[in-house]
Image 1: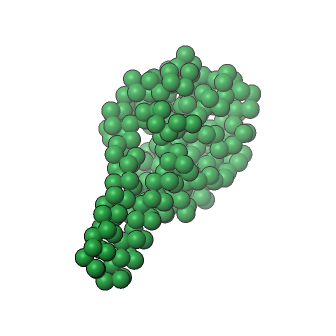
Image 2: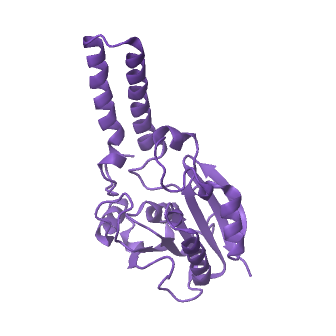
Length: 253
């Protein structure tokens, strides 16, 4: 797939920051040989150059930041059809994940479509443009709203997803979001939660990045599991994929 086909709006430091760093370190390496810097400085710059190249490869080919997400489990919405909420949809990576992975489903993409979370110009127009490119726009509805106060009626949805959005919130916001998602799900409705996991891929690509709870308790598996069960969900499956911790849960009685 063409990593430059979609426009998810991630700005320069996210999409091309590693390449910019690689150019800078390559120039420094050349200068180090030209000016005959000490050996340790050449080794250090060489390591930084290798890191920046590795980071860009991980970002584009492993984390696939410029492509739609892929469902981390085949057990989500196995019926293949239904109305699905994407809580914190942003520019559409998770909405396209559902629409492409479950071709008979429909998605309500809920987001504030305001503020800044690494996406420039976070608007429904950008979301719809990506959906049209994927050929799924006819099954997508963008809705402005807060996942802590979802503007939908009780028990109207078959499933919900949220990818790298709820872990932006503080603890009370997380609890409110889980309660709201449970409220709008029909009995036995499924919820697929995906949050950032502080794994080796993240540590290499973003070793200095302290947002999203990478180094705090938000990445603790038991903490997320307890929050979900306390909210009234039954955990069906949990697992990891590069940079991601996921839980598939079902609305309990």
